[in-house]
Amino acid sequence: KKFSHHNSITISFLDQKERSTMALSPNAISVVKATAAAVAPHAGAITTNFYGRLFQNPAMYTFFNKANQRKGRQPQALADAVVAYASNIDNLGALKHAVPLMAHKHCALHVLPEHYQIVHDNLMDAIGDTLGDVVTPEIAQGWSEAVMGLAGILIDAEETLYSQAEAREGGWRGFRGFTVASKRVVEDA
Image 1: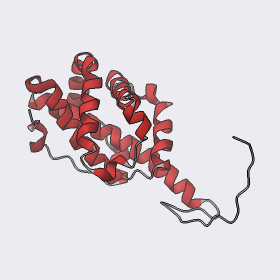
Image 2: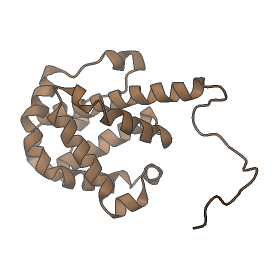
Image 3: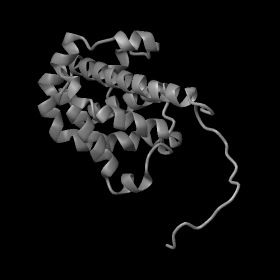
Image 4: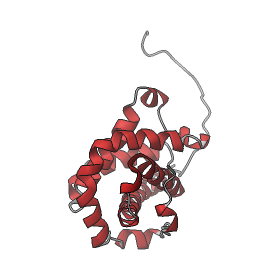
């Protein structure tokens, strides 16, 4: 079943200043807390469905390790992250070690703010497809807001890293071409 509840929900990216002051609504926190335990056993199925949808856009495949996809590690890692986030939705300090790790990985791959809307849309469709009619408009709104809230947290953390890299002597933002001047063997394989 195609998930359409979230289609009536307008969620767009806010500029960085607005995002950093944005908090989840009490309703979103309540909905996610109330449904997290019921969603958790389905998290693996949701994320497997999600990646199947996401990779219909070939450009998105470039952000992911193909071996981790084949072996199911990436869907499981995302499932674990979603469950951890949902379980700590009212205590995000518990994620203080996970967010920098994710932000560093995302920056290494040049993940940009606009990618999060694609992730959101595909994840919401995967939730609806996997869980079906139990996803009411209220549940969809709560989870949609929570997904975008986490996106905002990651975007802010990633912007800090991108800015730091750019501000360094000789630093830059984004991709940069390099020329290999020489190669040497440092260890026999």
